[in-house]
Amino acid sequence: MSPAARTAEADGEPDLVVVGAGLFGLTVAETTARELGKRVLLIERRRHLGGNAWSEIDPQTGIEVHRYGSHLFHTSNEDVWRYVNRFTAFTRYEHRVFTVSGERVFPMPINLATICAFYGRHLTPAQARELIRSEAAPYAADGAGESLEQRALATIGPRLYDALVRGYTAKQWQTDPRELPGSVIGRLPVRYAFDTRYFDDTWQGLPVDGYAPWLKRMASSPLITVACGVDFFDVRRELPRVPLVYTGPLDRYFDCRAGALSWRTLDFERRTLPVPDHQGTAVLNYADVEVPWTRVHEFRHLHPERRHTQDCTVIAREYSRRAESGDEPYYPVNAPADRDRLLCYRSMAAAERDVFFGGRLGSYRYLDMHMAIASALRLVRNEIAPRLTPVLRRAAASSRGPGSGPVG
Image (tube, rainbow, N blue to C red; front, side, top):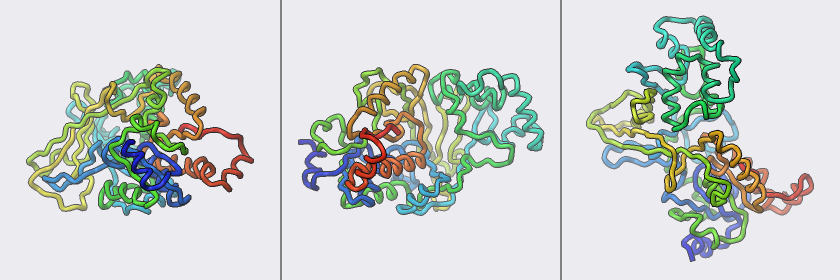
C-alpha cells in the first residue's frame, strides 16, 4: 500500500482527492473542507505545498527566496482578495520591471517613460500615441491579432517590437513569435502615461510573512490530509474511488495518447554575491538574444520593509527552454501544433466521470495566481459542491444533465 493510501486509510476515507498542491489545488481542498465539511486527500509530487509559489528563507542571508522565480500577488477580483486575506496580510509592494536592450534600460511594460527613453525625447501622451500609431499603421491590417508578432507590430510598431519584445519572447518561449498566439502579448498593456507599475490591479502586494506560511495555513484544516512527495501516477490505482481533481499536465493524465503537448520549463542559477545590492530592482529582463538568461531576480527588493543584511545579496538567473521528458513543465506553449491535440484532450477530459481538471497544467492555459484561485472557487461552487452535497446535487440535476467537470 502506498504512503498516500495508508495516510487516507488512517485518517478516514476521503470524500475528494486533489492531485497537486499548487494554488488551484490548495484552494479546492481548503474550500471543500471549510465550506462543505468534507474530507480531502491532497497529493503533491513535490515535497512542499504551493507549486511554483513556494518560497524559503536563505539560511546564509535571511533573505526570502522565491524558489521558482519572483511571484507577485495582484488582483482586481474582490472575491479572490477577500479569500486570500483569510490566510495572510499583504505588504503594499508594487512590482516594477526593467528591460536591458543594447546596453540601455527601459521600464516595462511599455509606457510613456519607455517611449520617451527609447525615442530620446520628451513626448506628451498625445504625441506618443501619434508616433506609435504611425509606426504601427502599416501592420494594423495585416491579420492583426492572429500571432504574437502580428499583434505586437500592429500595436507598437517594428522598432519597439525588435528592441524590447522579439528577442525576449523568443528566449522566454523557445518559439518563434510568429508561432505564438496573440493573447500572450495581450497580457501586457501599453500605457500612455508615466505609470511604471507592472500591474495595475486594485490590490497588489506580497504576503507579509512569506508564501510558505500562507500556503501552510491553507492546508491546516483537520479535514485535509496532505501527502507530499507522492506521484499520482505511482498510486492512482490504489486511491479510493471518490471524485478527483487533477491539476497535473493534461496530456500526461491520458498517457499522451493524442501526442505530447508543448511545455516550457525554467532553470534557475542561484548565487549569493558579496554586495549589498546587485541590480537595484527585483527583476531585470534581458531582451538581447546574445544574453542566454531571460531575467535576473534579486529577492531582497521584494521586501524593502525588512531589515536585510548589507554584507551580501541573493540573485537567481532564469533560463527558459522547451520541456523534455522528465522536466518540470511550467507553462503551456500553445503553438499551432498543440491546438488539435488540445481539442482531443479536452474531449477526453469531458468524458472522464467524476474527474475535474484545472490549474495551469490541467487546463493547458496560462493562469496567474489570482486567476487560479478564482477558477478553483468556481469549480467548488459549480461542480464539487453539487457533486458532494446531496441537496445541491438534486438541484443541479434538475437544471442540467449528468457529466464530468469541465477543463479549466
